[in-house]
Image (tube, rainbow, N blue to C red; front, side, top):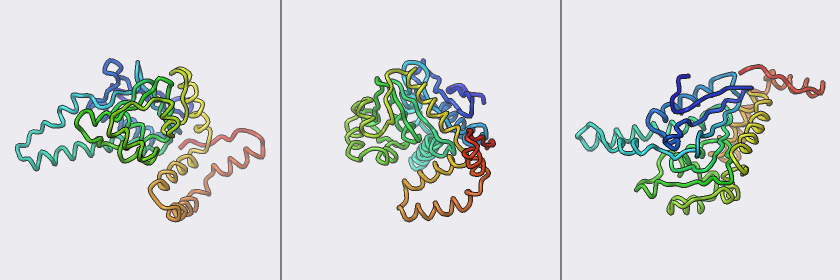
Amino acid sequence: MNLTAFTLEIKDHIAHIVINRPEKRNSLHKEAWDEMRSVFEHCSHNPEVRVVVLSGEGKMFCAGIDVSLLMNMTQYESKCESRKREEFRHHLLKLQDDVSSLEKCQKPVIVAVHNACIGGAVDIISAADMRFCTSDAYFVIKEVDMGLVADIGTLQRLPKLISQGLVSELAYTGRHMHAEEAQQSGLVNKVYEDKAEMMTGVMETAKMIAAKSPVVIRGTKEMIKYTRDHSVDESLQMMSVWNAAYIMSDDIKEAMTAFMEKRAPVYQEG
């Protein structure tokens, strides 16, 4: 892929995506948001990829939306107020879709946060499957200080991850939530001392996932997402339909054979 704001490395079925604008604190301009969706869609459909890791280059994970993009969002060519608002809504829906590319990715997405995770970056990590961070990490719903309502996923996804009361406090005050509190709240799975230690630990987790059946992992992600938004009964019904469709996979035969032969299973691509 031809990427300018990100880098992508695929090795041992693990796709490592890195936000690569360190000179701009990894803030994301228009082209970066476009690239983010493209690279996650690529990983979603690439049979070589079984799990995705997202991290940031340089001193921090991500400073959110580039200020230049915020300025451009209020400038539209149309003189008609209704058309201006329609253009804004279409632009906003596109940004929401860019963030949703992590959630829609068929493969599990692990985010590794070091130092700052600000504004739009919180939207991004909220759409991932797992979050890990360093001891110096902090998370900020910065939009309130910019005169904005956070509008590309934080207020919709974060209450599904941590308590609504805590989300309200963070969103109303714009205060920093540091690593220890983030772990206690359930936002992050584990806190590491520094970035090197974190990346080692995250890659170990990714390797464990990549060693499992790709079909099972994709199905598990789909069921977790479905259950989040549906009742237990509805989710059980969906589970029965899903396994009725997919349980005859060759992967279950390989898993059973490998268990009997006391070896690691080897699953086919895709």
